[in-house]
Length: 325
Image 1 (tube, rainbow, N blue to C red):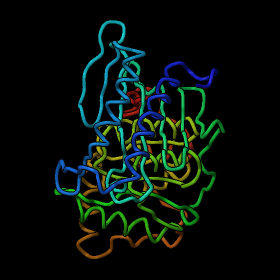
Image 2: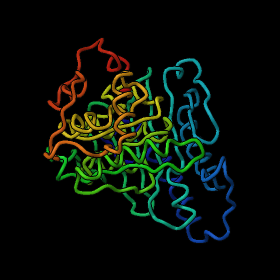
Image 3: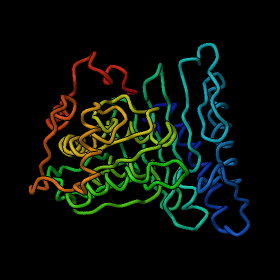
């Protein structure tokens, strides 16, 4: 392992590579996989379980008192001196891609200390790409420092997102959001792995990301990568308390503010007046129609205004005081 890295990050890298090796071996014979479903279109395989077990064994082998918050095996609190430490684990983000042989998936591991994100690893085993971040030390891809993209106009931006795929997902809401965003950007992609989407925002490969219905293990590691790479991440209204709120928006500060202006009304935290305006526009068919200047979006919310300027709200402002980093 690399000597200059934080010791806990080194252990997380070791765990991610162990899980990646299992995933790569299994990818050689996908027809032999046993695949189950948690619900319609939400798959889990024996590889998810084996990779998660390998990660947990590695982490607890080094830090037996730490807590675990994992997608497949659930949450357990730390003990004694380890009570402040919780590892947040997605052993295989992009399982649907994996079982179809579509090579966009990853291992995601984050460490939360006293409720704040402190270490992050996202490992893409198909490309051997390792994204890492430590709080206050920047974000890296394969030992190379990464930064979010510098674009400032939505019209120039490539964004990534997710599509609704489970029963109960807000399909019509997604369609309205796509109608708002797609005419205003250079492209919209749905790779199928939220953790990698966030890593790509951090690396500047894409300019922003938004999605609903995500869990903490989908976004924890990517969130630290984005902020350490100079970006912003929060919910659709621009507030930074998003980890367990099932809506996520990330971008560089200028693009983040413009996306909050577009998507804020679709947040469950949006004021009732904005929701009424949104629903009225959907009813008369005007969703997606707006200003002719596709690079500028006006939004009155303080969080959006600050995001567009690249500034933070003062300590104590709703959401930011509880941000998980």
